[in-house]
Each structure stands twice: as structure tokens, then as C-alpha cells.
Length: 134
Length: 134
Image (cartoon, rainbow over all chains, first blue to last red; front, side, top):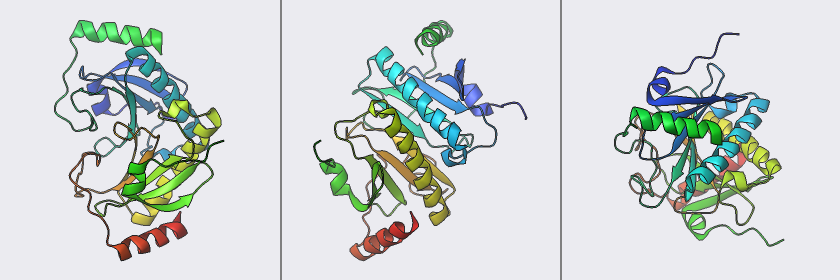
């Protein structure tokens, strides 16, 4: 089986947090919102229904776990979950902590303005906290 | 156990398609995109992780089934799946058939412009087709 390859766009926009049983957990490098991405470590999958049934169950379990822990960690008002893939075909699920008054509220974060990257030290600190929290 | 109540905003914006094992299946009354919504028939649930584990598994199974059948029915390029809930707190999952050149492509459909309702006869016809297809 060929090794899992992360899409170059996801690699460029994110920092690595962890490899879970199914998914690679990434932090979006955008300080406007606490924003994680789950990428099932399977090549050539674009739609959720293309995953094997046991992988779909694991994806749901990992979505629920990341969502709950991210909400607890950030005290966010709402978690947004989305799998769009209009630009990056590799299946990936966004899990975003949202609050009234954030840059895109109450609209979706995707396609809204430009990312505001973390400073190198902030990114390192946040990834370290997420590794402990998740 | 109290009977399931659909949020008034969801009721106003959609047409009833079917009740599945977990979810009520609704058609968004917006002719710009083939757009279904799955609402778990559970009261007082806002986040996916608040569902019982067996309900989460069923939600994933129903998301996968609706997505696959909607993609086949519409020949869409991509299915977008999203659970946002910034405006309507009742947990609901959008499943939207997307194509290059559609009204919001490649951005998300949520919050983009105004809905364009179907005519009464188009809505009835489409719901009838969906009841057979799903």
C-alpha cells in the first residue's frame, strides 16, 4: 500500500498536530479562529461515502472527539464542522471554533477574507497546547 | 419522551422528504443548488458530540447514503457536507450538490446571496423524485 500523501495545499496552510487512528490532525495557520482539520490517512478519497464503512465510523468518532475537546479548550459558542473539497479534492473535515463577533460570524469561515498567520512562536505554543489537550 | 420538534426556521425554509431511522430528510427550498438537510430527530441537541454514540454512527451512515444518492441523482461534481448551526441551534447537517459555475462556486453556499424558491409545481416534482431516489 502506497504511503499516505497530504495534499500540498493542506500541507502549506497548516501545522501538524497528531496522527490519530484514522486521521492526521492539522491546525490551520489562521489566527482568526481556532481551526483544526482532520484528514483521513487514505489516498484517493474525495467524498465521505468513498471511505470504507469502518473508516466512516472512525471519522465520525474522531470528529466528535476533536469537536468536544476543541470546544472545551476554547470555550467557543459553537463548533462548525464542514467537508467541502471544492478546491482541495483530498477528503478533509474542518472543525472550527466559532464565537459571535469573530471575523466571519455568523457566516462560514471558508472563503472569507484572508488568513492571518500566527507568529512562529504563537504557532509553536498553540500546537504544543493542542497536542496535550486533544 | 417528548415528540420531536423541528426548528421553525428549518420548517419555513424546507420541504419534507422523508423520516429515516435517525434523521428527518428535508429539501432546502432554493433552486440554485440541490440541497438536502438531515435533522436528527432528537430534541435539545446542538453539537454532533452531544448525540449518543449510536446516533452518531447512524448520522454518519445517513450522511453517506444521502450524499452518494444525491451525487448520483444530480451528477454533481462535488458534495459539500456541513454542520454549522451559528443561526439555527438545532443540530442539522447540510448536504449540497455542487458544480463549477454554480451561484457560489467555489465558495460555500451558506450565507451566499438569497434563496431562489422553486415554483410550487417544481418543488412537488423534485420532492417526488427524491422520495423515489433516496
